[in-house]
Every structure is written in C-alpha cells, then in structure tokens.
Image 1: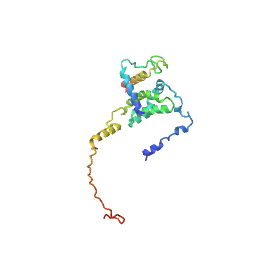
Image 2 (image 1 turned 30 degrees about the horizontal axis):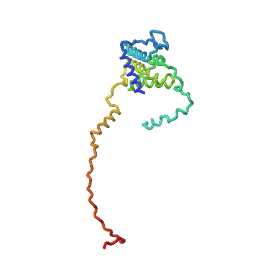
Image 3 (image 1 turned 135 degrees about the vertical axis):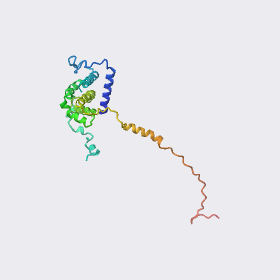
Image 4 (image 1 turned 120 degrees about the horizontal axis):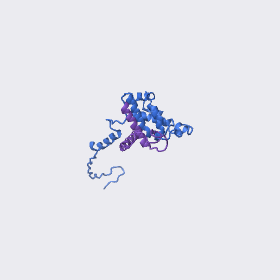
Length: 64
Length: 166
C-alpha cells in the first residue's frame, strides 16, 4: 500500500507542477470551498487535493 | 522470542473472512464518506490538532516513515467503514502533508519515505546478478574428446557346450 501512496503523491506533484500558475490556492468548489458555499457540485478532486497540499505547504513555510 | 514463522501463523487462514455473517463488518458496509472532499473534511481537523497527532509524532520520531503512518491512518479509516480504499489513496498526499507539518512544528527528525536509499532495490540486484553471471562465470561447455573405439578382437567360445572348430 505504501507504494500506491507514493504513486499518489507523485501524481499529485505532477498535477501541481503542470498547473502551478493557474491553480488557485483555495478550492473553487466542493466541500472544501472557502470562497463559495460548500456543495457537492463543481467538485474537481485533483484540483482540490492539489490546492489543499499547496495551502498546507504555505502554512508550514510560514509557521513551522 | 518472536520469529518469522509466528507472524506467518498469526495471518488469517484462507476463507476465514467467510466465517462471519455477511455485511457484519464495517468495511463491508457502504462507506460513510463517499468523496475525497468529505473524507478530508473528517481528517483535516483531527490531523491539525497537535494533541490528537502527538502519538503519531512519537512514532515518526522513532523512525517510522510518514508514508507508513499515513498508510496506517487511511487503512484504519477503511476498516472503520469511513471511506473506501480508493478515497483513502486519493487523500493520502494531504494526510502526508499534514503529518509532515505536524512533525516540523514538533521539531523532530523524521523520514518521509520518499528519500532515495543507498541500498538498491532487491529486484535490481537480482537482475544484475543474472546478467553478470553470464559474463563472469565461464559456463561454456568444452567439447569432449571422442575416443576412437577399435574393433574388438574376436573371442572364441570356450564353454563346455561350445562347438569345437575342427
């Protein structure tokens, strides 16, 4: 299972690198949306995961 | 003293899962959170709380990789029927990032699990041995010298009942 998690991490990194400039820091829609109301519509899971990872990294660089 | 054979004996026997009532286990039920976003909504507050993460930070400080801890968290979520294995794998990068952040905040030394190891992969070693074996060891078969067999001398019968040549 660890190998699959590592693959998921690599895929996420690739996703972040491809759309680094275009990708918002906060998810546009879905349950994790902070700009709009959380809903099940307009969910883009890879974007949401990538933006969450970016948010966590930004917070880590700032506070940790 | 525990050894490899005792771990082997602890494993479930084939068909053991079929001895319980169908759908009696949490992971046999429909998952509580069906999307990655819902599952993250469950995990993020818990993994952001330093008190709840403290035991995991201890484990990471002792040398367990962050990926292994993330695997434990997501597989325990599957066992509790919170989400499916697929959703667990999708949210794994976020769990890893949260754990790394908590480890940084706790100022401990940890390994993520993505570091390149000096020890090569066992399959690579096996391939190298297989390839080098052909060159290193002389496996060629030398042709054997053929013995030239001469004709055997004719042996005269010498028994009691043998015919005498006159």
